[in-house]
Amino acid sequence: MKITPIVLCAICALCIAFGVGRAQITSEHKYHADSLNIGKLWLLEVDSADWRYVYLTGTSNADTISVYTLAHQLEKVIPIPLTPPKFAGPGYPGLRLEYFARRLFDLDDQYEYLVYTGSELSPSTYIFNESGKTVFSCDSCQPSYSEWTSGPRNHDAIVSTTSGSKMLMTFVTKPVGYQEVYSLPGNLPGAMQAFRAQSGVTSTAENGSGSAAAFPNPASKEVRIVYTLPAGATTADLVISDVLGKECKRYRVGSAFNDILISPGELSSGTYFYSLVSEKGRSEVRKLVVGK
Image 1 (cartoon, rainbow, N blue to C red):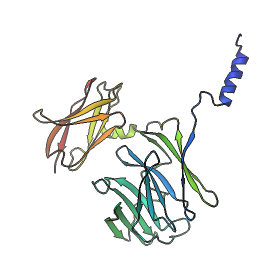
Image 2 (cartoon, helix red, strand yellow):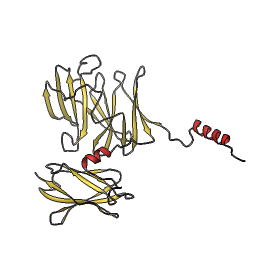
Image 3 (cartoon, one colour):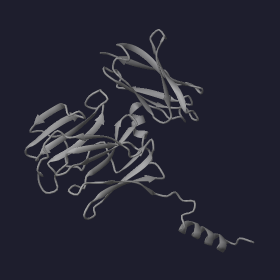
Image 4 (cartoon, rainbow, N blue to C red):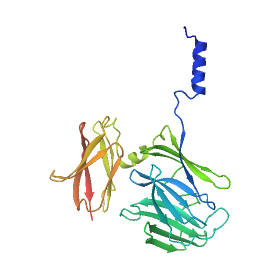
């Protein structure tokens, strides 16, 4: 049968109508709150390329943090060691979660988080770890922000992760509200470009052997090395040598992530040189200074 332009247009219209050949947005998981609190759900990068769903809820006010993996499996429930406060004013709860991360306020493997409570005129700020230990506290203080916002500063409604892009939507329904996570078919454009530019990491087009950059440099505590693998490579070795050329450390890195965190104690004080080594060759050798 001869396909005329009219028939071709009709076929294209049917394909569009039935979604043939088009990526779909699908519901991935639903988080239910209790009957007295809609709850707050965020998708946070709690550590380098380590993502968690963080759900703040409670029976009378926000007093519990539930942590879920990207597969929506409950990892742990963290009670906030404060008496649930009264509301500070219309629309402003008396307790606000501002940061939730690992190795931000401490360098161990526990989660730490910052909350502040009270009103704008009488606030108090606390940093707790997941065991309930107070890492920091101060009265009559609050994070220095120019305006009130709805959640932790390291979050957004649409986030690109190592498991694809996620979109979080809030539904206010009666009698119970809920929030739902959607998987998006694409990625946010330029999600890592600003991070790489700040660190001095080149793209694979500029350097066929990949690239790596350490910061802070000089470093006194942990060192984060951001890297880009060569085009077509899925793994490489990050090699660190001393001033005499003797290899001190070698880390296997892959395409699932784009940086590695070297903890304090892994490198003693001194001057080092590092590069990315793969089957495509060796990237530019750069200097790293570590001081205690």
